[in-house]
Length: 127
Image 1: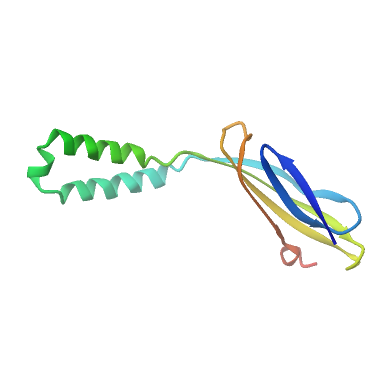
Image 2: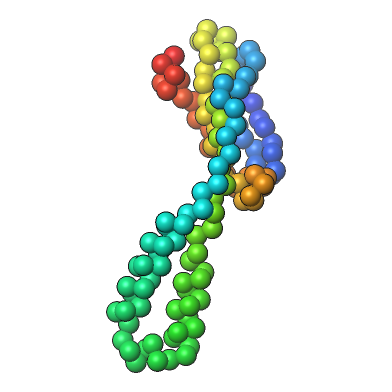
């Protein structure tokens, strides 16, 4: 078995390719997750924590500034994700092997990959 490498945007993805050609089984799907619900949950927890702080501390300008900074620092940004399924024929195993790829991108135009996950998923296809 040889290792196939794909270098894209500074990240090199390694995957097992054993003979034969690779083909796309499920075309790439790109999604944006705004994380609105997660941010609201975080704001609710932060508001609850603020209620528990003694009044003497909240009267301090510095303490209020610090709390505002902490809350804005923890804003959860949107997540940009691309995923697809490919397959390759294994001459050794005499069957097609299926591989799922999930890429987390740093930009809304789906460039600048931050992480790449690649794994075999034959059991999903019952092969």
